[in-house]
Image 1: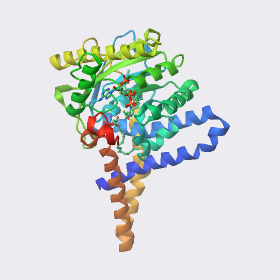
Image 2: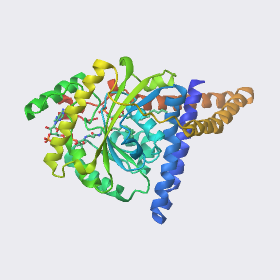
Image 3: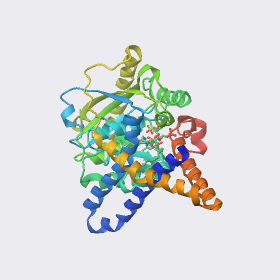
Image 4: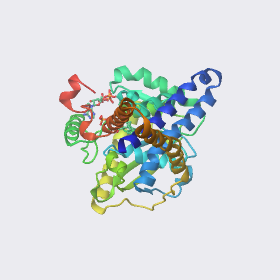
Length: 366
Ligand SMILES: CC/C=C\C/C=C\C/C=C\C/C=C\C/C=C\C/C=C\CCC(=O)SCCNC(=O)CCNC(=O)[C@H](O)C(C)(C)COP(=O)(O)OP(=O)(O)OC[C@H]1O[C@@H](n2cnc3c(N)ncnc32)[C@H](O)[C@@H]1OP(=O)(O)O
Ligand SMILES: CCCCCCCC/C=C\CCCCCCCC(=O)OC[C@@H](O)COP(=O)(O)O
């Protein structure tokens, strides 16, 4: 039955991918309309995952931020900088996107490998997500081109940058601190040394389009180690997100000064993490926007649309279908379930890339 449910989830994603494909002719006729339609279609996929986190697992997401910045959230384009320690940090990010109304349009500088993940990766293609190979010589041109395209984007968007470039592991941390030492930069305890090129080029090319940087730090209470499998199994987590709004005007235009600015920011982020690990909470007030019903309603819609008829088909098969048809259906469901499990494995840190491991970097970046 679980295989059947997972197949249903995947099918809904593939249907949306197909609808996105159908918008291709529209891009030539009315690009801004095509973008808006694709934002709504992407919302149909992302909000199902948000519904799993918010409504199925009941995970609580608390926002720590100052009341002066709060009215800007969701009303402007922004670059979001986030620490990269958790398997579901992207999902918590999506939850905040949902609550501030920018879920369908949010962007990320993502590794190229994710473009090939069915449903999510294919959806991203139509959202004009910026992909990188994490090899600057090869990335520079394509990243700049992709950023330029966002200048006339018709919806407010958040552009997420994991400046550490990869998920935190002890090994990657040790190596990046050796790099920090060689560069004469202070050591970080909780972060990898940030990669500055992506940030500087984003600030440079989105100046005038984006008005602020949201320096964000995510933690989970009581040293919880959240996983996507945990969320799917209904496990409740408690996420704390600290957000500081920094006007883009205050970030240096000069590349080397911009890189230094980012290193300094990560030193401050490290101090904040130290406070969190000592006290178990972030400083300042909490201002958490409530869950909205739309993610739940969209999820229920797809369940109603797919699972009910799929269950009926399955029942009919077992009652009257031939052994061959039953066998084929079961095999297809298991294949879809395997597909979903492979997608989930993309979020697992212990199956992560060798990027940032000195030995791996010489040969392989996958
Ligand atoms: C109110 C609420 C607010 C917020 C809510 C929060 C979030 C919601 C927002 C949006 C959500 C949207 C979408 C989310 C959905 C899903 C996202 C999921 C996943 C995608 C994420 C990824 O794929 S992360 C991986 C890809 N991204 C990045 O890597 C970005 C960061 N990297 C860069 O910017 C890089 O510069 C680069 C990729 C552009 C280029 O890579 P390259 O390796 O070539 O980098 P560099 O040239 O920068 O590196 C060489 C320099 O680094 C030094 N070096 C060498 N080894 C190391 C080392 N181990 N550690 C650190 N530094 C190292 C080297 O010496 C070079 O130094 P230079 O001085 O020469 O620069
Ligand atoms: C419509 C519903 C869809 C049903 C499907 C449900 C199952 C979906 C499962 C998984 C979605 C895949 C999301 C992929 C996002 C993974 C983000 C991520 O964490 O990337 C890692 C990257 O930053 C750094 O990689 P490395 O640390 O260098 O390695």
